Length: 362
Length: 147
Image (tube, rainbow over all chains, first blue to last red; front, side, top):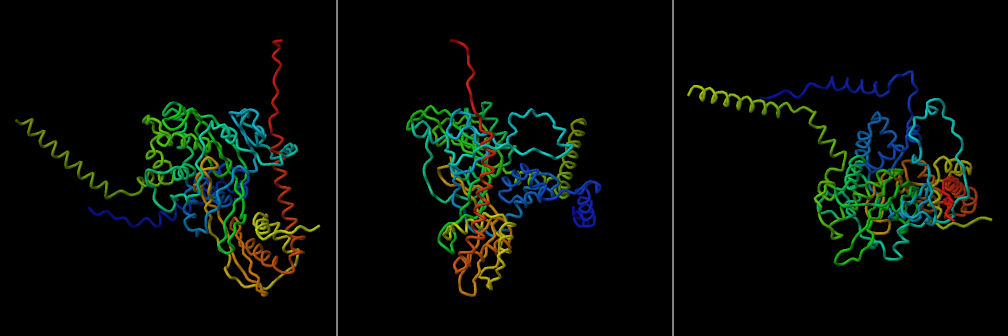
């Protein structure tokens, strides 16, 4: 049966006009500027940049405004914009050992060189609503102390000296890019890390939490968590050398997991790694836990059948734009599909009923 | 005393400078050199890479927006700019300074533009590091009174 699919233009235009009005809200309340979102809702901006896979705070703030605060919708806008940009190249891998740290903590070494630097954290706040924020915006200047002059060393470097932690194989191999080629399994670690860093925070958090609760033996220590800025260097084809083009704020998490050893490796600690745009520490810790769980095969561990060990399950369900696209499409017109199902169910009912009548008659 | 910067360094200073600061210092100099575009300002992206475990194999982290342009002064000097973000005016000013740093104007540009920008950046980094330092934990052990 043919079903008309034209005729919605006026309704759609009017719906979008109303959307614009609702987005603005009460006109007696001052309108939010993109700069206000960028400066004052920075962690939302960070999430949109990380999962949108594009670091540009102004664009992320604009997307949040346009999406009325729906962060997945905002991520969708950024992903769409990203595809319009020509790619000028790839930066040299960021040197996180040279990060200008705002925050740097270790849950494993109290007296780590460089110390425990808390930074602008929610930790140790009482999670009580602060009604002063609703009253006025005056904040006192943050206290200062003589700054550290040298770079802050990575904690894992100290364990490495004793051979107590698995070392990362050195490589300068060009990594695969899932924004250019479809994801294929089995994925190597570079592809998994790219997938995880742009994956949905809630999904990655849930997967990480499952490993803590016993789905995959994975007791992680946060060896180090650092947040700060790293310089970006891009090799310029015109000049034949690399120059600084800017800097990005990053959160890096290195976890350490006990490892009993295998046929080829002595007992030692193994590593999970998280690196995410912006101040995004829940995501970075989650990423490190899931990264570690997915490494079971290369470390010669047992497959516990846990969801977080299942590369296909994790990597194919982590992307919130793919997920929401497929999920939300089912609300769009399926009139013809449904008409076919309706006809089928009617026919099956007719057949069932008529055979029932026959049985009753016999 | 005037420092001397190599090209890699001055291009970095220009890219890292806040757009409004570069614009102000450039305008104050009052230069208006004639130039032709070799590549008009163009917005694109660069893929940022990290390394597994901080030191291992590279992986793709996500992109940043970048604006680039190239121009040539009447004297023949070519200036390039690759700067993070989507500010075409900033890219143009950075490319002009890059080109003029190859002329006899290098001295005044270094003194009146590059040095202040480098100093401002260092001061901003220091201000942030000072706030971080104030949040460093000083552990002390409580006396347990066992002896």
